[in-house]
Image 1 (cartoon, rainbow, N blue to C red):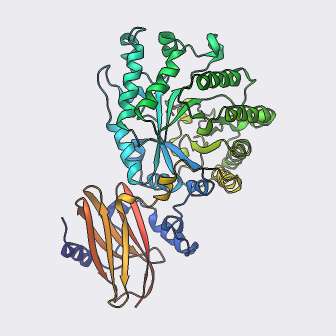
Image 2: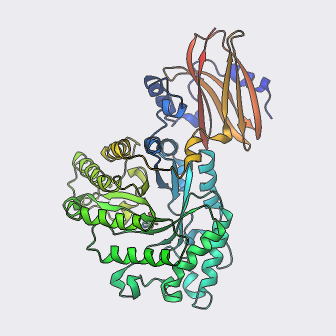
Image 3: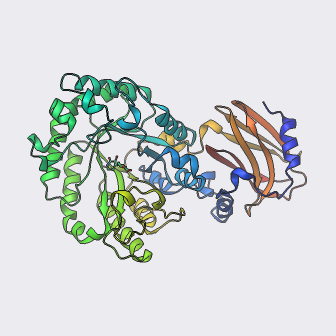
Length: 487
Ligand code: XIL
């Protein structure tokens, strides 16, 4: 374990004003620091002062939540993206890592590595996690069709759910238990989709899945997740409401409807024409005693002209229209976007534009800059009514990641400040002090630290008095604490 002397050695070797070390080369926090001190310095939360209270910060004031889908490779490889993710979101959802084709390399084995990464990353950064998805007709592994039959299907389904939900018990805010089970054009009973699960087990697979999930993780919010409800002529939405009603009547543990929210800016007029029906649908769901989560919001910009301004205004306008419906329904408790930045939208492969330009469907552009869509969400979180109960309160309250808790205790008499932090596991850590202009004043430590509590004395006799920020970060987290150094 590095000692105080190690700290001092590193500190001495890295002179005041040093340019930031390699792992910070692409780091955007220096900029954040600058903004931090221009912002209201009386704010209690350092995250807020740093502009780290993004959309989730606004949502949480209304006891709602905001988050986005993400994936392991992006989190690992892209520091500005990771920074934006932690800043904007209170909850994340793995876009791939919990789907069957990733989790089930074979009929008898599980791959937990990718999902574990997501859960650990979330935990270290004070984020909640949605689980997606336990039962879907897509993303089934290649062995599925030849191995699963009507005799063993129920066993496969319950075992999978018991194993996966059991492993992450207590760590998942909400599970998309069954995804996209309705497709009236398939012409099956009750408008159900003619999915492999339906073919093997009939409608009962839905109930089986929910009961297994509840048994394995009784605290998780269990969600039925569906798309295509915004522009509907009521055939889909009636089938969905009827399914939810049947499940509730049978006391199936079902707590919320997930409305995916894949919308298209060019459908603005169509959306407006159908707004009232969409609203009615949401209210019908609410009267069943269910909450509603917008689970996969993004806005396809195909059909809009190439100009970035046109597209950002069109997409932003559509986010606004969408929010004007969903944010006015008290049953809607949170919004998740399907990706946070245009850089990683799945729409470029699933719905490419005819001019081949990359799509701009999400709140941040490819450089993590906020766009009209971001401001539309912010406006609606600011202007929506307070929900009765925050479903991720404990996480929201621990936005300053509890695991790496950082404390700075100045002693004005001695011109010393005691800096304490606790690591849950061994980490490569950078501890630095920056001034109000965002300049590094001192690199206090840059080393691998063991799990446990660490203490360090900073003598600031030679520093000008004033406000500083102490930042503790590793490749997987960032926490900070504002300090007023006085003599
Ligand atoms: C999508 C991913 O975003 C794509 O990259 C992948 O190729 C297919 O799956 N509804 C869902 C999501 O519930 O899981 C889907 O995600 C998008 C539609």
